[in-house]
Length: 318
Image (cartoon, rainbow, N blue to C red):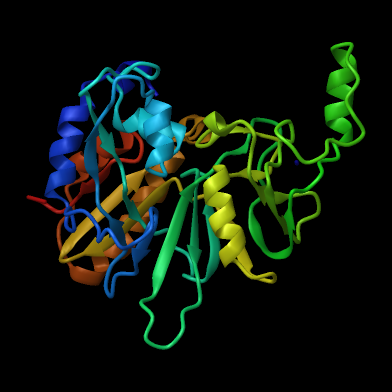
C-alpha cells in the first residue's frame, strides 16, 4: 500500500457559519440524495450545501465527521474551537458539505490530493440526472506520496487478503517484530473489506480498519476510504473506469455572477507559499477575463491564509 498556528486558532467558526449561509444553494439538499451525492449544476461548479448539527452527549467530532461524510482535516478546519474528543451535548458543529468541483474533466474518478477528497462522475442513462459522488479520503504520508497522473481501475476485490510490502516487513524487523507474510480478511486487515485496484502497480482505493485516519496523510500511498464509502463506490464503479489523480490546492469558478474560490493549505503548499499565490492569481486572472469584473484581492489573500477549505466570494460585495 502502497500555517501559521496563530492564524489557525482564530475564531473562524462564527465567520465561517455566516459565510456559508450567504453562499448560493445554502439550503439543505433533497433528502432523497444519498450522503455525498449531488446533482451536477447546469452552470458553475458549486455543489452541496453547508449546514450545522448539534452534537450529542457522547459523540466525538470524528463521529460526527464520519456520519456526514467529512474527513479529519475538513471537520477540524471548519470547527477549530470545538473539542475533538468531547464537543459537548448541544454544541453546534459546522458540516462543510459544499464543494467546488475540481478543474478536471468530469468523468470517471477524480482524486484531488490537496483536498483529501475523491469525486466520482458516474455514467447515467436516459432520463437520469447527471450527478457527482464525493467522499473524504486518506492519502500517502511524507515519504510515501500518492502518485499523480491518469490511470484506470483494473480489478475489484471483496474481502481481500493483504500482503505486507517489503518496506513494512523491514520496519517491523527494525522494531524487533515479525510482519506476517499475509494478513487474511478480517478486522486486522488494513485494506478493509473492499479494494479497487489501479493500473499503477501496487496502488489501490480501499477501505480501512482504522477509519479515524480518513481525511489525513497517513497511508503508504494508497487511497483509503471509510468502509461504508468504499463499499458504495465498489458497487458503483465499473472496471476500466478512468482515474485522474491531481493536486489542486486552489480552486475557483464562477457561479451566478460571482467568483468563488477555495484554498487548501498543506505542508507542501506552505513551503511554497509564494508559488501558491502566483498560481492562484494566474487562475483568477484567466477566470476574470471571462466576465471582465473586479476581484477583491484582499479577500483572496485572507482566504489563502485562513482556515483551509473555506469557500469565499472574491467579487466585491460577494
